[in-house]
Image 1 (spheres, rainbow, N blue to C red):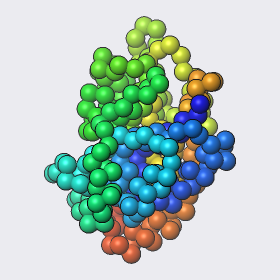
Image 2: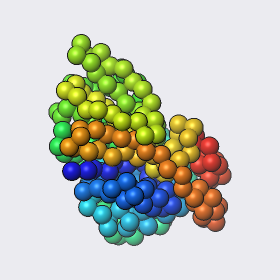
Image 3: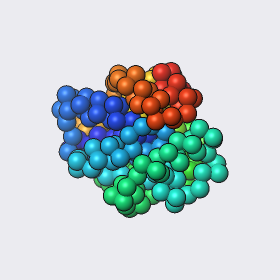
Image 4: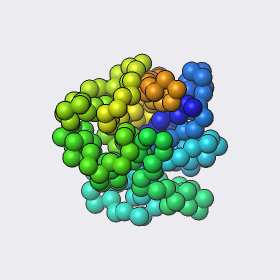
Length: 244
Ligand code: ZN
């Protein structure tokens, strides 16, 4: 089986389409796993939900998915994120609201836990250090964990002694799954924040027991033009050019 792993689409249709095309070129997938934040920030929330829904997929909820339907307030959002969230809410129809409302906080599939933030704080915690991975290990009920939220492609690997080391999950890097626990963040499809503006995703091959990360260039200009036309915050438009 081949699973495509995507996270943090953030209403970026051009990025999502490009990623799906790229996966197809690389041999396709049996099921798509999405780690939340389908909406928020970008110009095409409904289109992204509709495109995702065409595929055999699983998804968990992200903080932006919840905020867009009022399941969570935006007090902890920065002003740009809050403004984009307000705009997103106005675009959503009943179908999209119901879709987002039905997303679970956590899913277990094969040897993996799927979550947006972390196993102990599924919606909110940023898992960005070896110590936060270590603190979450006791909560993890599967061998491996997939997270999003930080928009940074990263791997946190435990060794036989229980020590955890982290490294960046670079383009085309092959991660061989072993008996020890691993936390994997495939990076963000629609708003990367690791100084590489290319869309990021991963493919899990169950036969080879490998997860491979991929980066792909998409039409950032078109996304930015749509955001300008909708009056979305300038900071959110410009950051796409820099991946930050
Ligand atoms: Zn996000």
